Length: 420
Ligand code: KE4
Image (cartoon, rainbow, N blue to C red; front, side):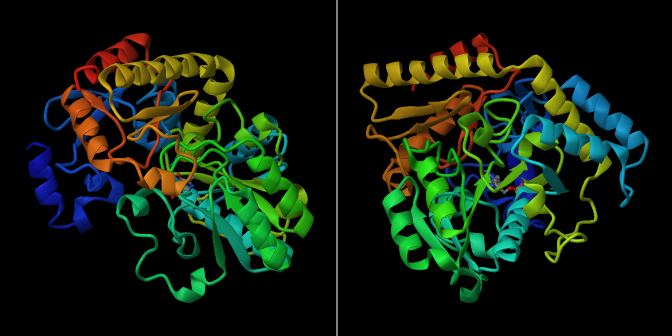
Protein backbone atom coordinates (compact mmCIF):
# COMPACT_ATOMS: atom_id res chain seq x y z
CA UNK A 1 0.00 0.00 0.00
CA UNK A 2 1.10 3.60 -0.66
CA UNK A 3 0.57 6.78 1.39
CA UNK A 4 -2.79 7.56 -0.20
CA UNK A 5 -4.08 4.06 0.50
CA UNK A 6 -2.81 4.14 4.08
CA UNK A 7 -4.43 7.56 4.57
CA UNK A 8 -7.83 6.29 3.34
CA UNK A 9 -7.55 3.28 5.63
CA UNK A 10 -6.45 5.36 8.63
CA UNK A 11 -9.31 7.81 8.18
CA UNK A 12 -11.75 4.99 8.95
CA UNK A 13 -10.41 4.59 12.47
CA UNK A 14 -8.42 7.75 13.38
CA UNK A 15 -10.03 11.22 13.36
CA UNK A 16 -8.85 12.87 10.15
CA UNK A 17 -6.50 9.92 9.72
CA UNK A 18 -3.92 11.61 11.93
CA UNK A 19 -2.77 11.64 15.53
CA UNK A 20 -1.91 15.32 15.33
CA UNK A 21 -3.78 17.78 13.07
CA UNK A 22 -0.84 19.41 11.30
CA UNK A 23 0.07 16.01 9.80
CA UNK A 24 -3.14 16.04 7.72
CA UNK A 25 -1.55 18.44 5.22
CA UNK A 26 -4.53 20.81 5.49
CA UNK A 27 -2.05 23.67 5.44
CA UNK A 28 -0.50 22.62 2.13
CA UNK A 29 -3.08 20.40 0.46
CA UNK A 30 -2.51 16.98 -1.01
CA UNK A 31 -2.12 13.62 0.68
CA UNK A 32 0.07 13.21 3.75
CA UNK A 33 3.28 11.26 3.20
CA UNK A 34 3.55 8.07 5.24
CA UNK A 35 7.02 7.58 6.68
CA UNK A 36 8.36 4.02 6.92
CA UNK A 37 11.85 4.47 8.36
CA UNK A 38 14.53 7.09 8.86
CA UNK A 39 18.30 7.22 9.17
CA UNK A 40 20.39 10.36 9.54
CA UNK A 41 18.96 13.20 7.45
CA UNK A 42 16.75 10.92 5.36
CA UNK A 43 13.44 9.10 5.61
CA UNK A 44 12.00 6.33 3.50
CA UNK A 45 8.28 6.52 2.70
CA UNK A 46 5.49 4.03 2.01
CA UNK A 47 5.64 5.27 -1.59
CA UNK A 48 9.10 3.81 -2.01
CA UNK A 49 10.64 7.29 -2.10
CA UNK A 50 13.49 8.72 -0.04
CA UNK A 51 13.29 12.27 1.30
CA UNK A 52 15.79 14.58 2.96
CA UNK A 53 13.91 15.55 6.11
CA UNK A 54 13.95 19.16 7.32
CA UNK A 55 11.01 18.68 9.73
CA UNK A 56 12.83 16.36 12.11
CA UNK A 57 9.68 15.24 13.89
CA UNK A 58 8.97 18.95 14.68
CA UNK A 59 12.21 19.37 16.58
CA UNK A 60 13.30 16.33 18.62
CA UNK A 61 15.60 14.83 15.98
CA UNK A 62 18.49 17.29 16.25
CA UNK A 63 20.89 14.36 15.78
CA UNK A 64 18.95 13.05 12.78
CA UNK A 65 16.89 9.90 12.52
CA UNK A 66 17.86 6.73 14.43
CA UNK A 67 21.27 7.90 15.62
CA UNK A 68 23.05 4.66 16.51
CA UNK A 69 24.07 5.64 20.05
CA UNK A 70 20.55 6.80 20.91
CA UNK A 71 18.92 3.66 19.50
CA UNK A 72 21.39 1.52 21.42
CA UNK A 73 20.64 3.41 24.65
CA UNK A 74 16.91 2.94 24.07
CA UNK A 75 17.29 -0.76 23.29
CA UNK A 76 19.36 -1.35 26.43
CA UNK A 77 16.96 0.56 28.64
CA UNK A 78 13.98 -1.24 27.13
CA UNK A 79 15.60 -4.63 27.71
CA UNK A 80 15.95 -3.70 31.39
CA UNK A 81 12.26 -2.76 31.64
CA UNK A 82 9.94 -0.44 29.74
CA UNK A 83 8.48 1.30 32.78
CA UNK A 84 8.49 0.97 36.53
CA UNK A 85 6.36 3.76 37.94
CA UNK A 86 9.09 3.90 40.54
CA UNK A 87 12.27 5.94 41.03
CA UNK A 88 15.33 5.10 38.96
CA UNK A 89 18.95 6.18 39.25
CA UNK A 90 18.91 7.28 35.61
CA UNK A 91 16.20 9.91 36.17
CA UNK A 92 18.27 11.43 38.98
CA UNK A 93 21.36 11.47 36.76
CA UNK A 94 19.33 13.02 33.92
CA UNK A 95 18.01 15.75 36.22
CA UNK A 96 21.58 16.44 37.38
CA UNK A 97 22.73 16.68 33.76
CA UNK A 98 20.00 19.22 32.90
CA UNK A 99 20.76 21.26 36.02
CA UNK A 100 24.48 21.22 35.19
CA UNK A 101 23.93 22.37 31.61
CA UNK A 102 21.28 24.94 32.62
CA UNK A 103 22.55 26.65 35.80
CA UNK A 104 19.30 28.67 36.04
CA UNK A 105 17.50 25.37 36.66
CA UNK A 106 18.05 24.10 40.19
CA UNK A 107 15.34 21.44 40.06
CA UNK A 108 13.53 19.69 37.22
CA UNK A 109 10.37 17.58 37.04
CA UNK A 110 9.96 15.24 34.07
CA UNK A 111 6.61 14.70 32.34
CA UNK A 112 5.61 13.11 29.02
CA UNK A 113 4.96 15.98 26.61
CA UNK A 114 5.48 19.68 26.07
CA UNK A 115 1.78 20.26 26.68
CA UNK A 116 2.05 18.57 30.05
CA UNK A 117 5.12 20.65 30.86
CA UNK A 118 3.31 23.91 30.09
CA UNK A 119 0.16 22.82 31.93
CA UNK A 120 2.30 22.10 35.00
CA UNK A 121 4.27 25.34 34.67
CA UNK A 122 1.10 27.44 34.58
CA UNK A 123 -0.39 25.62 37.58
CA UNK A 124 2.92 26.00 39.42
CA UNK A 125 3.03 29.75 38.69
CA UNK A 126 -0.55 30.14 39.88
CA UNK A 127 0.12 28.11 43.01
CA UNK A 128 3.37 29.93 43.78
CA UNK A 129 1.97 33.46 43.29
CA UNK A 130 -1.59 32.86 44.45
CA UNK A 131 -2.72 34.67 41.30
CA UNK A 132 -4.77 33.31 38.38
CA UNK A 133 -4.30 35.45 35.29
CA UNK A 134 -1.87 34.56 32.53
CA UNK A 135 -0.46 36.56 29.63
CA UNK A 136 0.55 34.79 26.42
CA UNK A 137 1.42 35.98 22.94
CA UNK A 138 -0.59 35.63 19.77
CA UNK A 139 1.10 33.18 17.45
CA UNK A 140 2.97 31.41 20.21
CA UNK A 141 1.82 27.83 20.75
CA UNK A 142 2.26 26.15 24.09
CA UNK A 143 0.48 22.85 23.57
CA UNK A 144 -3.23 22.13 23.76
CA UNK A 145 -4.06 22.80 27.40
CA UNK A 146 -7.46 24.54 27.43
CA UNK A 147 -6.29 27.94 28.58
CA UNK A 148 -3.41 28.02 26.10
CA UNK A 149 -5.72 27.52 23.10
CA UNK A 150 -6.35 31.22 22.79
CA UNK A 151 -5.25 32.76 19.51
CA UNK A 152 -2.49 30.22 19.45
CA UNK A 153 -0.19 29.47 16.57
CA UNK A 154 0.99 26.15 15.15
CA UNK A 155 -1.77 23.69 14.20
CA UNK A 156 -4.57 25.94 15.29
CA UNK A 157 -3.16 28.84 13.29
CA UNK A 158 -2.82 26.55 10.28
CA UNK A 159 -6.49 25.67 10.68
CA UNK A 160 -7.28 29.37 10.88
CA UNK A 161 -8.95 28.75 14.22
CA UNK A 162 -7.99 31.26 16.89
CA UNK A 163 -9.28 29.06 19.69
CA UNK A 164 -10.75 25.57 19.94
CA UNK A 165 -14.29 24.34 20.41
CA UNK A 166 -14.77 22.68 23.74
CA UNK A 167 -12.71 25.23 25.61
CA UNK A 168 -14.86 26.78 28.30
CA UNK A 169 -14.91 30.58 28.25
CA UNK A 170 -14.05 30.33 31.92
CA UNK A 171 -10.75 28.71 31.01
CA UNK A 172 -9.69 31.50 28.71
CA UNK A 173 -11.27 34.39 30.56
CA UNK A 174 -8.14 34.77 32.64
CA UNK A 175 -5.74 34.74 29.71
CA UNK A 176 -4.50 37.97 28.18
CA UNK A 177 -3.15 37.76 24.64
CA UNK A 178 -0.66 40.34 23.39
CA UNK A 179 1.05 40.60 20.01
CA UNK A 180 4.51 39.01 20.04
CA UNK A 181 7.30 41.62 20.19
CA UNK A 182 4.86 44.27 21.45
CA UNK A 183 6.42 45.25 24.79
CA UNK A 184 4.24 48.35 25.04
CA UNK A 185 1.11 46.18 24.93
CA UNK A 186 2.51 44.02 27.72
CA UNK A 187 3.36 47.04 29.84
CA UNK A 188 -0.14 48.39 29.27
CA UNK A 189 -1.73 45.12 30.45
CA UNK A 190 0.60 44.80 33.42
CA UNK A 191 -0.02 48.41 34.41
CA UNK A 192 -3.69 47.68 35.06
CA UNK A 193 -3.63 43.96 35.79
CA UNK A 194 -0.05 43.15 36.75
CA UNK A 195 -1.02 42.49 40.36
CA UNK A 196 -3.40 39.73 39.20
CA UNK A 197 -1.04 38.05 36.75
CA UNK A 198 0.62 34.80 37.82
CA UNK A 199 2.83 34.48 34.77
CA UNK A 200 3.79 35.70 31.34
CA UNK A 201 4.58 32.76 29.04
CA UNK A 202 6.55 33.20 25.85
CA UNK A 203 8.51 31.22 23.29
CA UNK A 204 11.81 33.17 23.55
CA UNK A 205 12.30 32.55 19.83
CA UNK A 206 8.86 31.89 18.36
CA UNK A 207 8.54 28.80 16.20
CA UNK A 208 4.78 28.37 15.81
CA UNK A 209 3.96 31.18 13.43
CA UNK A 210 7.05 30.40 11.44
CA UNK A 211 10.40 31.48 12.88
CA UNK A 212 10.01 34.89 14.53
CA UNK A 213 12.88 36.21 16.61
CA UNK A 214 12.43 38.48 19.62
CA UNK A 215 12.97 42.15 18.82
CA UNK A 216 15.90 43.81 20.58
CA UNK A 217 14.93 44.41 24.19
CA UNK A 218 11.68 42.43 24.03
CA UNK A 219 12.71 39.56 26.30
CA UNK A 220 14.68 41.86 28.58
CA UNK A 221 11.58 44.05 28.81
CA UNK A 222 9.42 41.07 29.73
CA UNK A 223 11.88 40.12 32.45
CA UNK A 224 11.87 43.61 33.93
CA UNK A 225 8.10 44.07 33.65
CA UNK A 226 7.26 40.73 35.26
CA UNK A 227 9.79 41.25 38.07
CA UNK A 228 8.25 44.63 38.75
CA UNK A 229 4.67 43.33 39.12
CA UNK A 230 5.54 40.04 40.81
CA UNK A 231 4.45 37.82 37.91
CA UNK A 232 6.64 34.88 36.98
CA UNK A 233 8.30 34.72 33.57
CA UNK A 234 7.92 31.35 31.84
CA UNK A 235 10.19 30.61 28.90
CA UNK A 236 8.56 27.87 26.87
CA UNK A 237 11.69 26.26 25.40
CA UNK A 238 10.02 23.11 24.11
CA UNK A 239 11.46 24.10 20.72
CA UNK A 240 14.34 26.38 21.75
CA UNK A 241 15.80 24.22 24.52
CA UNK A 242 19.11 22.61 23.40
CA UNK A 243 18.37 23.76 19.83
CA UNK A 244 20.99 26.55 19.67
CA UNK A 245 23.49 25.19 22.17
CA UNK A 246 23.82 22.42 24.80
CA UNK A 247 21.64 24.43 27.16
CA UNK A 248 18.60 26.71 27.07
CA UNK A 249 18.20 29.87 25.02
CA UNK A 250 17.55 31.72 28.28
CA UNK A 251 20.98 30.72 29.54
CA UNK A 252 22.59 31.67 26.22
CA UNK A 253 20.99 35.12 26.15
CA UNK A 254 21.51 35.73 29.86
CA UNK A 255 17.84 36.21 30.74
CA UNK A 256 16.76 34.17 33.73
CA UNK A 257 13.19 32.94 33.40
CA UNK A 258 11.50 31.86 36.62
CA UNK A 259 10.24 28.63 35.04
CA UNK A 260 11.49 26.95 31.87
CA UNK A 261 9.58 24.26 30.01
CA UNK A 262 11.42 21.76 27.87
CA UNK A 263 10.49 18.90 25.55
CA UNK A 264 11.31 17.53 22.08
CA UNK A 265 15.15 17.45 21.98
CA UNK A 266 15.51 16.39 25.63
CA UNK A 267 13.62 13.22 24.75
CA UNK A 268 15.67 12.48 21.61
CA UNK A 269 12.47 11.40 19.84
CA UNK A 270 10.80 9.69 22.78
CA UNK A 271 7.79 11.18 24.65
CA UNK A 272 9.04 13.68 27.22
CA UNK A 273 8.58 17.14 28.71
CA UNK A 274 10.16 18.92 31.66
CA UNK A 275 9.61 21.85 33.98
CA UNK A 276 12.67 23.54 35.51
CA UNK A 277 13.22 26.39 37.93
CA UNK A 278 14.62 27.49 41.26
CA UNK A 279 14.39 25.19 44.26
CA UNK A 280 12.09 27.77 45.88
CA UNK A 281 9.55 27.66 43.07
CA UNK A 282 9.88 23.95 42.23
CA UNK A 283 9.43 23.02 45.89
CA UNK A 284 5.80 24.05 45.52
CA UNK A 285 5.23 20.89 43.48
CA UNK A 286 3.70 17.86 45.13
CA UNK A 287 4.72 15.95 47.22
CA UNK A 288 6.84 18.80 48.67
CA UNK A 289 4.31 21.54 48.15
CA UNK A 290 0.62 22.15 47.47
CA UNK A 291 0.68 22.22 43.64
CA UNK A 292 -0.38 18.78 42.47
CA UNK A 293 1.22 17.18 39.44
CA UNK A 294 1.64 13.51 38.55
CA UNK A 295 2.19 11.07 35.69
CA UNK A 296 2.31 7.31 35.18
CA UNK A 297 5.15 7.54 32.67
CA UNK A 298 6.92 10.60 34.08
CA UNK A 299 10.66 9.88 34.07
CA UNK A 300 10.08 6.82 31.92
CA UNK A 301 13.41 4.94 31.75
CA UNK A 302 13.34 4.48 27.96
CA UNK A 303 12.56 8.15 27.31
CA UNK A 304 15.21 9.18 29.84
CA UNK A 305 17.78 6.94 28.13
CA UNK A 306 17.05 8.50 24.73
CA UNK A 307 17.09 12.03 26.11
CA UNK A 308 20.19 11.61 28.21
CA UNK A 309 22.21 10.09 25.36
CA UNK A 310 21.02 12.86 23.04
CA UNK A 311 22.02 15.62 25.44
CA UNK A 312 25.36 13.96 26.17
CA UNK A 313 26.14 13.74 22.44
CA UNK A 314 25.16 17.38 21.94
CA UNK A 315 27.39 18.41 24.85
CA UNK A 316 30.37 16.30 23.71
CA UNK A 317 30.16 16.72 19.91
CA UNK A 318 28.91 20.34 19.80
CA UNK A 319 27.32 20.17 16.34
CA UNK A 320 25.91 23.67 16.75
CA UNK A 321 28.43 25.73 14.75
CA UNK A 322 28.10 23.33 11.81
CA UNK A 323 24.29 23.37 11.90
CA UNK A 324 24.37 27.18 12.07
CA UNK A 325 26.75 27.37 9.09
CA UNK A 326 24.53 25.08 7.02
CA UNK A 327 21.53 27.19 8.03
CA UNK A 328 23.36 30.31 6.85
CA UNK A 329 24.16 28.73 3.51
CA UNK A 330 20.58 27.57 3.07
CA UNK A 331 18.92 30.87 4.00
CA UNK A 332 21.34 32.97 1.98
CA UNK A 333 20.83 30.63 -0.97
CA UNK A 334 17.05 30.86 -0.75
CA UNK A 335 17.16 34.64 -0.50
CA UNK A 336 19.61 34.91 -3.43
CA UNK A 337 17.47 32.70 -5.65
CA UNK A 338 14.30 34.53 -4.60
CA UNK A 339 15.90 37.86 -5.53
CA UNK A 340 17.09 36.49 -8.89
CA UNK A 341 13.62 35.16 -9.65
CA UNK A 342 11.77 38.12 -8.23
CA UNK A 343 9.96 35.83 -5.81
CA UNK A 344 8.02 37.58 -3.05
CA UNK A 345 9.67 35.81 -0.15
CA UNK A 346 12.42 35.98 2.42
CA UNK A 347 13.89 33.17 4.51
CA UNK A 348 14.02 33.86 8.24
CA UNK A 349 16.81 31.93 9.97
CA UNK A 350 18.37 31.50 13.39
CA UNK A 351 21.24 29.04 13.36
CA UNK A 352 19.78 25.74 12.10
CA UNK A 353 16.11 26.84 12.28
CA UNK A 354 14.50 28.44 9.23
CA UNK A 355 11.17 29.46 7.69
CA UNK A 356 10.68 30.79 4.17
CA UNK A 357 8.05 33.52 4.57
CA UNK A 358 6.17 34.26 1.37
CA UNK A 359 6.26 38.01 1.55
CA UNK A 360 9.16 40.44 1.27
CA UNK A 361 8.50 42.45 4.41
CA UNK A 362 9.86 41.09 7.68
CA UNK A 363 7.64 38.99 9.93
CA UNK A 364 7.65 40.25 13.51
CA UNK A 365 4.36 38.86 14.83
CA UNK A 366 1.25 36.82 13.99
CA UNK A 367 -0.41 39.51 11.89
CA UNK A 368 2.71 39.69 9.70
CA UNK A 369 2.84 35.89 9.45
CA UNK A 370 -0.83 35.70 8.47
CA UNK A 371 -0.21 38.26 5.73
CA UNK A 372 2.12 35.83 3.97
CA UNK A 373 1.00 34.00 0.83
CA UNK A 374 0.12 30.54 2.13
CA UNK A 375 -0.77 29.34 -1.38
CA UNK A 376 2.74 30.20 -2.52
CA UNK A 377 4.07 28.33 0.51
CA UNK A 378 1.99 25.31 -0.48
CA UNK A 379 3.45 25.44 -3.99
CA UNK A 380 6.96 25.60 -2.47
CA UNK A 381 6.18 22.69 -0.14
CA UNK A 382 5.00 20.41 -2.93
CA UNK A 383 7.73 21.48 -5.34
CA UNK A 384 10.34 20.55 -2.74
CA UNK A 385 8.51 17.36 -1.79
CA UNK A 386 8.40 16.25 -5.42
CA UNK A 387 12.13 16.99 -5.60
CA UNK A 388 12.79 14.77 -2.55
CA UNK A 389 12.83 17.26 0.33
CA UNK A 390 10.38 17.13 3.26
CA UNK A 391 9.73 20.47 4.97
CA UNK A 392 7.04 21.20 7.61
CA UNK A 393 3.59 20.86 5.94
CA UNK A 394 2.52 24.26 7.25
CA UNK A 395 3.51 27.88 6.56
CA UNK A 396 3.43 28.51 10.30
CA UNK A 397 6.12 26.14 11.47
CA UNK A 398 9.90 26.13 11.60
CA UNK A 399 12.16 23.80 9.65
CA UNK A 400 15.25 22.28 11.22
CA UNK A 401 18.75 21.39 10.06
CA UNK A 402 20.09 18.50 12.12
CA UNK A 403 23.60 17.34 12.95
CA UNK A 404 23.08 14.68 10.26
CA UNK A 405 22.62 17.21 7.42
CA UNK A 406 25.61 18.04 5.22
CA UNK A 407 26.55 20.65 2.65
CA UNK A 408 25.51 18.19 -0.04
CA UNK A 409 21.96 18.19 1.35
CA UNK A 410 21.91 21.99 1.39
CA UNK A 411 23.33 22.29 -2.13
CA UNK A 412 20.78 19.78 -3.44
CA UNK A 413 17.95 21.63 -1.65
CA UNK A 414 19.00 24.94 -3.23
CA UNK A 415 19.36 23.35 -6.67
CA UNK A 416 15.80 22.05 -6.40
CA UNK A 417 14.52 25.32 -4.99
CA UNK A 418 16.11 27.13 -7.95
CA UNK A 419 13.85 25.16 -10.28
CA UNK A 420 10.66 26.45 -8.61
P1 KE4 B 1 3.81 18.63 22.70
O1 KE4 B 1 2.64 18.46 23.66
O2 KE4 B 1 3.37 18.58 21.25
O3 KE4 B 1 4.98 17.69 23.01
O4 KE4 B 1 4.41 20.10 22.95
C1 KE4 B 1 3.56 21.21 22.86
C2 KE4 B 1 4.41 22.43 22.56
C3 KE4 B 1 4.71 23.30 23.59
N1 KE4 B 1 5.46 24.40 23.38
C4 KE4 B 1 5.95 24.68 22.14
C5 KE4 B 1 6.78 25.91 21.95
C6 KE4 B 1 5.67 23.82 21.05
O5 KE4 B 1 6.15 24.12 19.82
C7 KE4 B 1 4.89 22.67 21.26
C8 KE4 B 1 4.52 21.72 20.15
N2 KE4 B 1 5.03 22.04 18.86
C9 KE4 B 1 4.25 21.57 17.72
C10 KE4 B 1 4.93 22.01 16.43
N3 KE4 B 1 5.40 23.35 16.45
C11 KE4 B 1 4.04 20.10 17.76
C12 KE4 B 1 3.62 19.46 16.45
C13 KE4 B 1 2.20 18.98 16.52
O6 KE4 B 1 1.36 19.62 17.17
O7 KE4 B 1 1.94 17.94 15.89
